[in-house]
Amino acid sequence: MRRGIISVVVLALLASLSLYRSSSLQDWLMARLSKAAMSQHWEEEQALQALVCGSASPLGVDPGRAQACIAIVTPEHLFIFDTGAGSVQRLMQSRLPLDRINGVFFTHYHSDHIAALGDLNLNSWVNGRPAPLQVYGPAGINTVVAGFNMAYQLDRGYRTAHHGEDFLPAAAGLLQAHEIDMGIVWSDAKLVIRAIKVDHSPISPAMAYRIDYAGRSIVISGDTVVTEDLFTAAQDVDLLFHDALSRDVLNVMIDAAAHVGRERIAQIMSDVIDYHADASQLEARSAAANIQQLVFYHMVPTPANPLLSIMFKRDLNGKTILAEDNMVFTLPVESREIIQR
Ligand SMILES: [Zn+2]
Ligand SMILES: [Zn+2]
Image 1 (spheres, protein in one colour):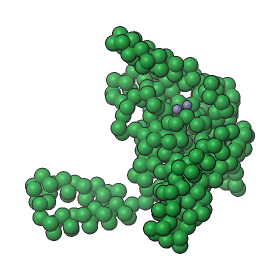
Image 2 (tube, protein in one colour):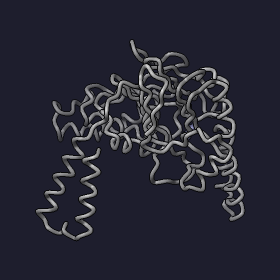
Image 3 (cartoon, rainbow, N blue to C red):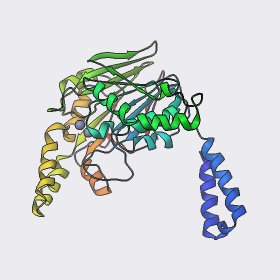
């Protein structure tokens, strides 16, 4: 990482001196930068880790944020929970070892949670994933997966024809669907994933997930209002990623939209209020469930500027974290510590 930063600083210095107009210097710099970039890799830790690969909601635009995505990483596992638009760029930036991906879990099938599934499938296949990508979700998963497989059928054929069957085996380029119900949905000797019923009405079913690994635990809410089921299942967990809606911000925006005659926008913003969690309720519920760290993600609206972030935090206690893309939370085994970078 440090070598990469030094290279960028050197590049900026040379650019400012206009020395980069020399072709040989360009080649030298490009070689250094390429080697630095290609030698970077995800740093394995004896820990349960979460990468925020998408912190935005569909309401509001922030080029620095992808839509809903959390990656869960251990030395033996890699799972992706939701694949919102732009999220695969975050996974690539973070140098996650996509070739060893165990699977994707969907919370529900709103487009802001599934849009990048094709990108994830392609990138993990090209990186060397040896078998079809396993995709898990509630009822509806067979339709979603069949649709992606059909839409990318031609692309898979092009890739295999171009690179060869040995390099990109056609059979490994497919998605494989698994319809799941509430309860334990994946486990091995070290890691357990449970699906939890949540309330995103009228969208049903919708799931949250709890991940337990070596005594550490994380819950990912997906989209839901505040529900008893989630906080019961999240009792005593280390880390909770919860979707969050700021009524204060939305009320101002709804009034503004109505004031300038944008009735459709005002209507859409009014409609989202009843199927996301009111941010002002989440800290008390998390404290009652003895949750060590609450993190807001999928924020409605997306805090695309500092004013929105300040308004989002208006009634919070100062400990809750507003997720940003590429944040990493590390929960070392045999510890209660949560390290955020
Ligand atoms: Zn949704
Ligand atoms: Zn959503």
